Image (cartoon, rainbow, N blue to C red):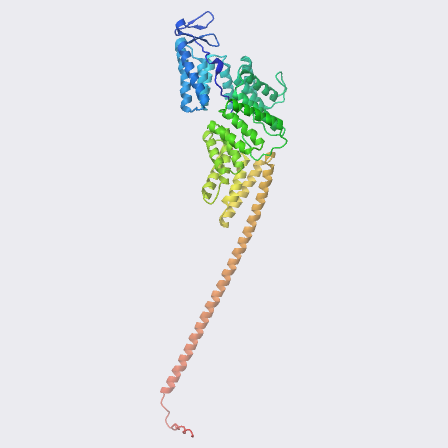
Length: 529
């Protein structure tokens, strides 16, 4: 939900105080009157007199508040210290009159609001209304907080703010800008006595706020956003009606945009920066305009300035990260998304953006670390918004392109997992025209994976079959060699046995004596010469 609660110094009603009791007396009209020596010369909106000590404490607190606003050096300590100064003023007034100091309580709430201490701010706004039911500035802040927390719907909040504005006789600039932001968000075409549609009513309310105070920066910012939305309307783009503007959607092509309205938006933003160069929101709006102008370098500078001026400016961190991510500035995007998550740890878009920045920065030096951390961010996305289709698309890419790296025995299971995740994405994205292109790519990637798996598995099967054949041939060769060796050995043994038998027979024949009666052996005649 966009944050639309404005922050502005109190101004004209700074010394409106309620009092009765203590050293005060109640006159016939029910108003508190102080002894002349205790009067400050100021009265509340209800006619009660302000005690001089309460007025002095209030004036000191207001000077401190304005000094911090000018220096833009608010932090948790200064917010609490300034709020305590206003509460001291309220305590002094209550001690003198028996009634708390409504304006001081309201300004204590504003002090806490400067540091996004919304619970404390709301508490003091409610206390201010309890003191003075007609305190329309506090009532407007409460109405905006109720809407932000989902305790009031858009239509009823607009109605409530319109009533507060009428009760204030159109002199509540905060309420005027707040209702304008909500009217821009709603975008109703219904007509009423104040305009033919919500946009016409919104610009009227912004102009009314500027008529009250032509330096009121929330009004300048909202007017710039109004012209930006008018420019985008021609291209059919979504309005960004909140106080701080919508998030950048990177990669959206600018087409049919109304350049005249875009120029007006840029002009108003420039005027705002000239009036107050330390107002962070106007730089964020300028960055949104520059994105539409395709001046991305300018947009990066504007978003950077906004987040430097206000380190708690969530949207500025997100926009700075998104533009850097679009142009492969992964390191800057990573840091900005982490800054955003410090402010809103359960923000889906920030976790998803960080996962993309981590994935984009993967290299050999950080492969395992970034892959695992990117998966962790995607897992967190599933916990926050389980039905968001984008998570599954990006998880499938991470799985397919990085987790499936390595040997085929590891790659194939991961590729099958990636294909299954793509199918989950297609199922979740069904019926959403914004995902048509991604669904088409997911189906193509799934088919590519299936083809790859088939090719790898067929190749693996062929490799295994060849290995088995080679093993069989090797076994047969080894067996043949073994059989031959055995045959050779047997032949050699047979030959040895035959040779031995022959030798034994020869030896036996030689050793046998001649037979009796046998003629002597005839000596062979000598050779003739």
